[in-house]
Length: 380
Image (cartoon, rainbow, N blue to C red; front, side, top):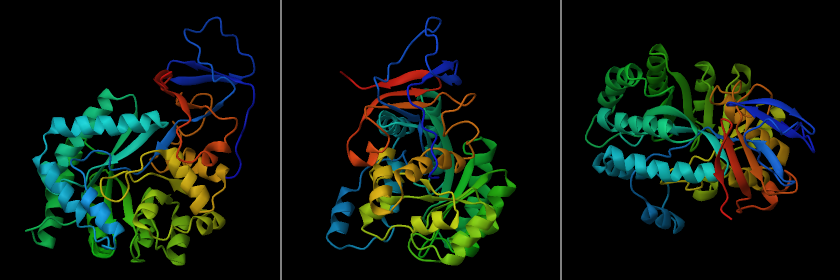
């Protein structure tokens, strides 16, 4: 993670949606368009492998109350679920387009988007259909994750809701090809390890790949379960145990860390330094959502990782690109600037990549290229 390949004074030739060649002084006469980085920095398109970017409503009252000492208990998920139930699909698409467009302008070219604010068959499918429509209309690579097991809806017995996830939601999601992954919030006061195992086994049997919200609030064994099930990633991990980290490494599970959520909630950060020292390929994500993290810039997340989690800038940049792509099983396609891979690039108005955390909170993005096309240019 600390070893970056840095090339100075080179051109990147793109043909179609791919990087065709990287080298000094390539002949520009036969190309249709030239983008001048003006001596700046070009990095791979940023990859955000954990977001809840399609939702309805806002929760600023909850946010402000928490700053005055109200503990986080996850109850706000139900408030957003009520807003989603009232919203039309068109409303969800419009809101999602706004937020995802802002993420694109901050350099994110690939993002995962979870459901989880429906908490019913109709609500979850409505969210995932909105994600599918956004995938078709936005110049971003979007990966959908089914998160029906985000919380428990009011008025339904716990076992009955889990049964509905397994017998109704997962089959509908798979039949309509609405998601690539299934996620479960495995933590204290949410889904137990046994409940999570039951749901994820059903999802895997239906052909969905697996993710977990794991050990955010307490060391309940979510990381160990992710390893047992050979999940693609285990996310959050603020309270992960030494045993859990060892299990993740042994099973090849990607730990996805979300420093923006710890920052917003005022919690201790995940033990990123320990994970990297153990040899775990740490990834970073925003966790952009209406309740616990409104940060949607991966550049800001890189800055937090460097300042608060003691990652080097090289480690943080790797975690936000290639390792994040691994957390979505897309590393052969995106996450690095290589010949043959997708031409997803971000042009930064910086002198060197080490300035990314130095200019924390600023947006130095001059241009974004996705699939070989310029999809964003900074005004002026």
